[in-house]
Image (cartoon, rainbow, N blue to C red):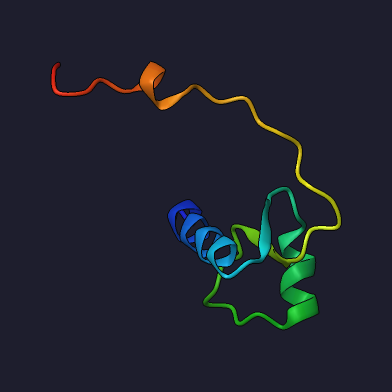
Length: 74
């Protein structure tokens, strides 16, 4: 299952609440299951940390919307 849309919504909600978040991949799911006693029916696929950032995040380079979207035409 793909958890990225749920994680995105969670991260947008945390920002709206004045908090910061960070998605984490590459974790040891077996150790997570053991440490938090996660029931067998759940499969951890992503972690999202939530809190207050110690310092601002690194800036990211993204296209301006005008460079990536076409308006009122095809």
